Length: 302
Image (spheres, rainbow, N blue to C red):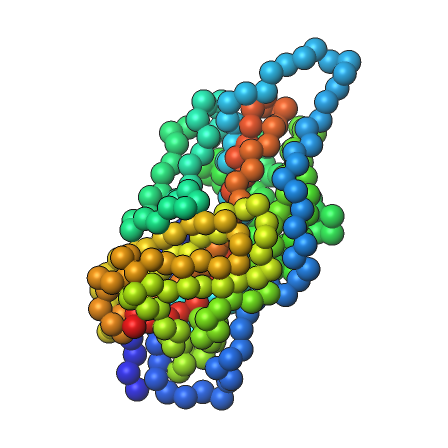
């Protein structure tokens, strides 16, 4: 038995290990974990509460950030994790600042070879011991930690896709945002192999490689990020991260791939991303809501 162990540095919050095993197992290589729920897209309308009897006040600046990520890992054993689906929810409320919160996702039409995790300087504030996040079918609570960040834990079946959520605070104030959904399929099909014996089979061509997903057609951004490692998994060779419209197909140009050796191992992150800026009257500013739905597959440079 031979193990290849490489560090996947792409994960937004922490490091994940990838492990490839060459022995056979009894599981089918063609199993997959893809979102099979109804993926009808909704609009990005923001519904702000108004009160015609109150004095008019201007809502401006940025007073908060919500980051909500669902990640489906096609081969958990390859990544050194136990769960195939991981969900993280974090909210940070702070003093009013002029800038909106940045993201590592490149603008549509751009490819980059480094991932820039930028964060604005701000002073987080407490708005109570917890906040409630209410969807049409499911509700969960995010609790304040010692850094005044609000962290929530939920399961995949508690995620209401393409739905309006209401964030309720303990002082009675609230604001709304709209969730997103995942994919019914991604291609090449080999990206989805769940068996470590067959993982890393998807060819990613040095001359340029095309990926597909669906359903598509939303007004959101779609990003594909490749984390490329040496054949034995001991060295990170680099990244390629490209963003485009959610049209169901994206080609990574060959000039970004030609420098990698053949049979380099690749972790393929396919991510639907949405940023929504919603008004929150409680702090008289806007909250940036960043939503990520990712599927992580495996492949190799060819």
